[in-house]
Image (tube, rainbow, N blue to C red; front, top):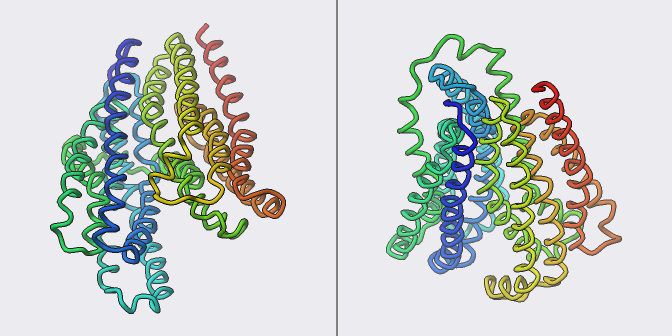
Length: 438
């Protein structure tokens, strides 16, 4: 890639922020529309099966093994434009994704069969074939999104996050128009499963069509075992970090039920959606910021790096303050209006959610700095430790603290581990670079 100067890197982040906010806004609007329309068309019971199918299929996104972020970081780290190296990176990443998809599909089929068998008694009035078709449709959609991840990563690595956001925004608008016309379609689970995943699938098809010609043949060195294995390990680190995000954003709910019971499960599920939205908001800045930071590191532009870290930290602090003010003043009213029901102990959960959002703001700023500075392996190890330690504390303290304290436990763990280790490691690396430069 070309050697970007300070102005072009900053401009790429600003443009990505603008288009990213529009993209996140359209995504929120789609989700607000989708739930009442789907429930109205399918009725509540079938909507429950639809949510189960989409929740199961969402784990297939891990099949990309973090290749979007891995490709972006490797391309951003190239000191100069080199189409041959970009092609080699793409081929390796694509090969890894294909292998992971085959493995993930095998596990997906096994889990899906178990799900169908375990719910067979409750499917008496439900067309089982419709659920099977929805599982297949969702699987195909996630295969397409996984295959496109290296090509989108190439764009991000070239500091073209704004382009990726615009493509996804257009795809989201198409999905919104299709959703508004959904009452004209047959009220079937596969139809709404496809509509739910339409936007990422359309964007992924575009990245595949535009990106495939960039691969100028497969060089023999592109498939060398050592280099491909190193890239797979790096991608595994990003995937582990993604699992940690899933854990904080709702994947821990089964563990929560086992430890704390079902009394506040509905409230925990809604709060997990709020946390997912906050993660999505932070990603608008973090993804282009990390790629631009990697680009600056490739040419040792330490002045821009220091300025970007200061501005980025200040921006994150302001974002957290605004989010917590809105959540504290109007959160209970907004969530009650959105869900059309009064959730148990919502006030306590909102206060705990504000603390967790603060922990996420601090930790994930340094997570993406770490991605640019020294890859994902350290982040992955810390993420695994955090998930294990959090799970242990859930069961240890479940009888001593209220269920809303589960968010405080998660906050304590991620700040204690990643929130301490990553800043110290990052600052040490930056001091080392400054010494080497001088």
